[in-house]
Length: 149
Image 1 (cartoon, rainbow, N blue to C red):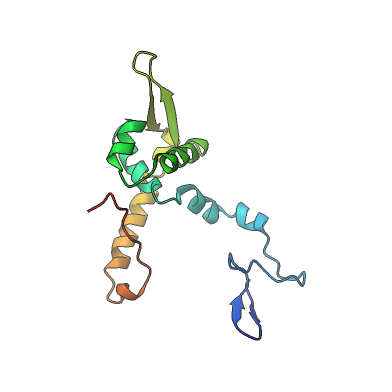
Image 2: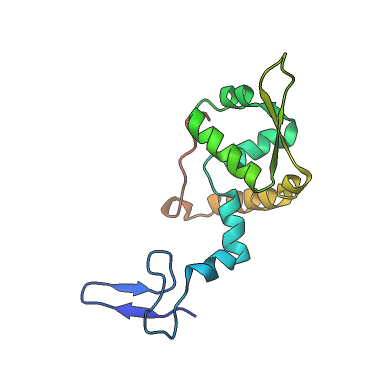
């Protein structure tokens, strides 16, 4: 349960990321509790500007690193590598080295990674509905990546 704290300049809602909880010992929300929350864990796994686009491309077929980089020119090599490694560490993506003759690697979604398909589909449909609202211009909007028209 969250509570509200009033200070001389503002009112803050406790339990938010910026204000993690009271220190009076009664209503402390620890980072451990947040880390153990399935919802925050799921959001942490899929968050990242390029992960949904990586998921979409890898769901169609496996790709090499260079193919992914060329398909998404707005992402830097460093960020692409980081996000692929995060997805690999979460068991969503497999990385298969190619033969010494071909040099390189091939990334593919794992069977576990494919289980995120319905999650992304549900988020897509919710996002479309959210953007179609009459007052959507006042709400949260995300700039599209530079590689998209």
